[in-house]
Amino acid sequence: MSFTTTIKEEISTIESSSSEKIAELSGYIRNNGLIEKEKVFMTTENKCIIERITENIKDLYSVTPKIEIIENRNFSKNKLYQIILEDKENKILKDIGVVDEKGKYLDITPTYIVGANEEIRAYLRGVFLSSGSINDPKTSRYHMEILVEKSKEAVFVQKLLNLFDLNAKILSRDKGYMIYIKEAEKISDFLKIIGATKAVLYYEDVRVYRDQKNKTNRLNNMEQANVDKIVETAIKQIEDIEIIEQNDGLMLLDDKVREVAKYRKKYPESSLKELAEIISLETNKPITKSGLNHRLRKIKELAQSFRKMNKE
Image (cartoon, helix red, strand yellow):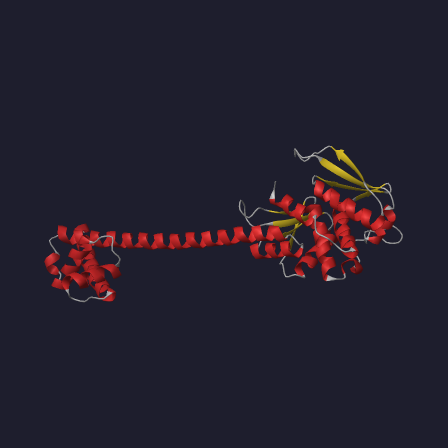
């Protein structure tokens, strides 16, 4: 079962008031309803959604929609169900703000349908049940989307989402518009808004785990990068010392610099800080990291002189 299906099954069990049921039906039917020949057709693969929609219609209007199995052309193995509303459909469509008194389709949902905070949540719940999806945070990138056919409806849904500061955005698609959210925290907030409590707990657990894992990986990468840098620097310093040795140039260095050359070769994997501590401890002559670096620069300058001379 997909994460989206799990969410839809959970929110299909939420207890709602009459006004919330109206708002939810409005969001669902506006985005998954085909009005044709005095009938309303809605399609879904999810039995929980069928039960949710039919129960809400039955509770509000004492009408039981017809359910039929139709051909699924989405290359899915799941059965595709069609909910058919053919009794009191005009009254219902007017009541939930899909058409006006003359039966003309309303591009924008009337404000009284989403007049209260809980009604807005219910409307968004209906829209998500109709055409929403959320990637499982355990297996993919953070992404939530709702596909909407009409541009004005897309803008309306985006505004409702952004009333909760969700930073929802819209992209145009071949067959409509995609309203999407990519921020993990915002997606979690959306789940709270539509009442998917169990899904929130799961999402947050995975998100925290992934964030911690990513943080650990970043620290490990930084640590490895530092190690690589230390090794690379040490290799270059040892090459400088070997060039000087090959040209019998060690006696051109003073005693302190020659001592550093000896310890650099003896401890090739040590950082400058570690090498300074080792020299200080073994010789009983304190040397700072800065002082050590100064002496290594003298070695480098002499090695460069030999390289230049050898080329000539």
